Image (tube, rainbow, N blue to C red; front, side):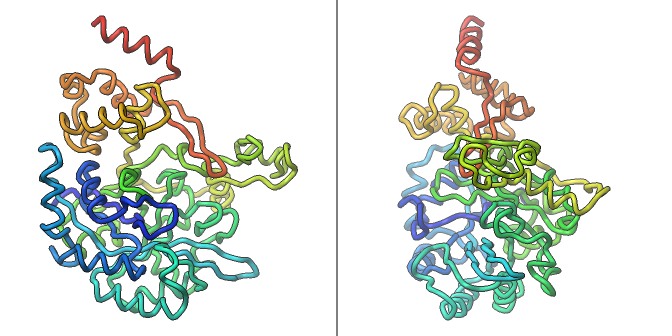
Length: 431
C-alpha cells in the first residue's frame, strides 16, 4: 500500500490553447518536480497523440504505463537529486466535450474517461471516429448524448472510469448554470447508477459539493485540467493503495478507506466562483445577483452565474439535507504563485520566480511535499523564512481571498499588501 497522488485530467499539445511542452517528456519532468505519481495521458482519442503514447510509453504495473528509459534517463539526469527518483506512471485518459439537445435545451458537457489498456483506447477510438472528427482537437467535440458516451466507455471495458468533469462550470459542467442539468438522473437516466465519481473543478471544493444530496453516493475527485506541464497538480486526488490500475481506480469507484481525499485550490481562485461580467468589471455575490434580478447593471445583459450561486440553487432542492463526513481535504496555493507574491510580482514565469522555485525544490524536495508536509522549521532552516511563514499561513487557511468570476481567475494571498510583506521581511532580517 502506498500513498499516491493522482492527476487524471490533463491535455497534450494537440489540444487547443495548450503549451507545446505538453508532451510526455514535459509531463514526466514536471510530474517529478510537482510530486505526482499517477498522471493521465490526456487526449488519448487523438490519433497523433495516441501514436506518441505507443511510441514513448511501455507497460509497467497492470494497467499502468511508464516512460521508456531512452526518454526518461536524460530527464532524470537533469533533475535535482531531491526529486530524481520519484515514482511516475501514466494511465490512458481523455476529456471529451459532448454537445447535444436534451429536454428542450442545448447541453454542453465535458467528461473524463479513464481506460486500463491501449486495446481499450483503440476500441473507444474506433467507435468515436464514426461519430465525429477525432483529429481536430485533443479534446474532441462530439454530438453525442453524455449518457451514450458513458455507455460506449463501459462497453469498451467494464473497468473504465467515467467522471463528469468540473461539474459546476457554467457552460460545460453537468450542473452548470448555462447548459447543465439539475440532477444526475436527468442527465444519465437509467445509467445514473454508473456515475460513481465527479470532479469538483477549480471553483468548488468538497464541502460545497456535499451540500447537494444527489452527490452523497459519489466519490469527489479533483484534478488539474492542466494545459501546460507547469499546471499539473493544481488540484489532485490522493489514494492509499496498491500500485496498479484496478486498485487505484477501485479506490475512486468504491470511495472506501483507500480513497484518502483531495488536494484543492481555495475555490475562490477558480475562474467561475462568483457571478459577474468581466467586460463590465462587475462581480456579484449570489445575493447581489438576486437583487439585480440576474441582470448586469452596466450593460443590461444577463450575468454569468457562477459556481457558488448555481450550487445554492441546486442544493435548495434538498432542504434539511445534512452533508455526511467528507474525506481529507487540503488547500494549496501553487508554489510558484506563493514565490511570485513574495517577490512582489504577478507573473509566475519570470526568471527570479523560476530560479527561486527550482532552488526550493533542490533544497526541500518536490512541490507537494513543500506545500503539504515539509516542517515549517525545515523550510526556515533551509534559509527561506518568508516562504516558511507563507506556507504556514496557507496550511492554516490564513489567506486573503479575492474571488474569480466570468473567466477571470481569483487571487489568494498570504499578505495583505506589499507593505505588510516588506515589514515582515524586514523583521525577519533583524531576527
